[in-house]
Length: 152
Image: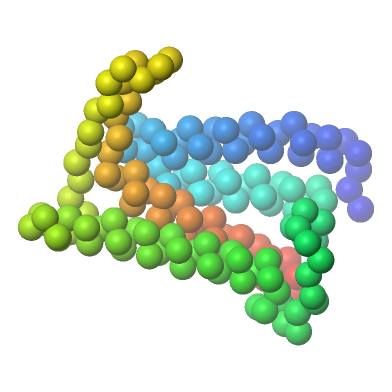
């Protein structure tokens, strides 16, 4: 059983970890960061929640779920696997789209949006799609492993 200190620390630290994770994810095509490290940090936040509140925490947030016969059929694990597969599809799709324009696999481009409130201009890179796929693969894969191993 975890202590009140651990749960309070998790409530404070998890949002900070998630904000840093999103920041690293978004700056990945220009600066160090990207989908992989953003996904690892997001998984770290989930792991901290699991440590503080237990592996059944997603069930507390969601609706009543039927108990599964095996850990691989558990609705939470199935959702993590879907996240993994969605990320894989997005990453591969992001690499294949340039082929439609007669460009090499994984070619990238960018667009600069001007007159954006607060930011003035924002650079949107096509590499962000690939990074999103990598992010979802890392989060889905690592959370599946954590859930399956943690349930054993």
